[in-house]
Image (cartoon, rainbow, N blue to C red; front, side, top):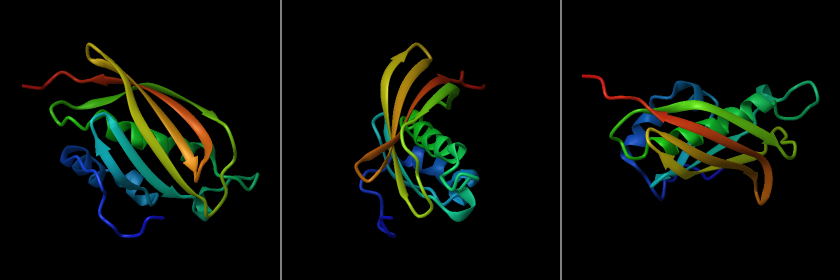
Length: 141
């Protein structure tokens, strides 16, 4: 893990959203970067995240990717953007103690919708690929 250093690149809106995200924070996730349609989130696979095959449960890897996706969707700070759908492909197993890093990147915005790709890595190894579909909510008056 990268220790207690401050994130190198920081978007205040995404950071505030992440700070309020109790689910991600309770899983030990750390937001490392959030800027211009991109976000990077880190998580260590803990002992309670391992399934009956002694590998990281896919739901936790999905949650990591989804958190990075959410941060990338909300860097602009104007309107609230949420997931309208997502899918994941698991490429390799992760194990207890592995440090996973999810990098989300905006691919396309069209109207109030968007597409984002997230790659989850352990070091240089790709563990999973995630594609998220976003929807920006109308402003409430």
